[in-house]
Image 1: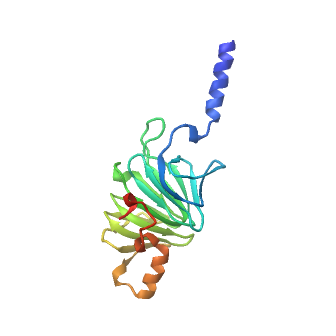
Image 2: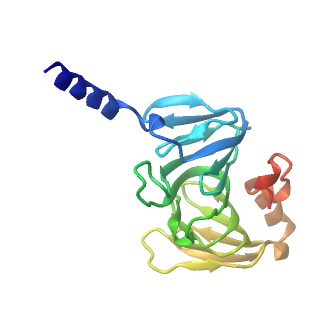
Image 3: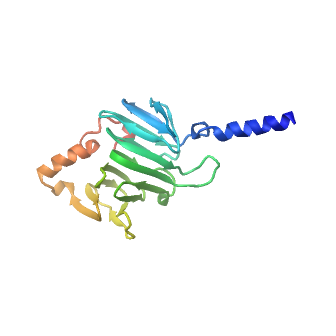
Length: 217
């Protein structure tokens, strides 16, 4: 009976453990405060070398930044004043295949696919969905608009509820999702006023010096 009770107690303890105890999806390679991760209400300040877990909501302050390297070599930069959540990861703790699903609620980010099948990546924003096919790109997100600056590979994107994907495949091409997905054109051809606005939204395209070299395009 004593062994049975001990086994039940151990099972209850394991069931109560948060995802933080079950294995990480990636690691922080660079952190600029303020930056934290919220896992089921448990908030921890991020530092270099910290693990990132499925379910983490990463938040940065006005000058904050987090560079994340996932286990499949996918790279994600969380820019200043940004909130995003890691909803799923490609290899779950029990070994089952999954997807890398990131929900970007607001702010700026940089994304580069890793070694996993390219159909396994999904990025959700308040206005739509981004699917990537072996790609480097930067993103800027507000509650009403998502903008995508393409560097390499193919970026697929669509508005919420849409069935058809729009495709970016040319260097420096800008895509936008509001109530529809639109290609705005090549940023090299845009006016100085618009380019100045984009410099504020896509800070890494203008200056990569804040990033470690593996996160440069």
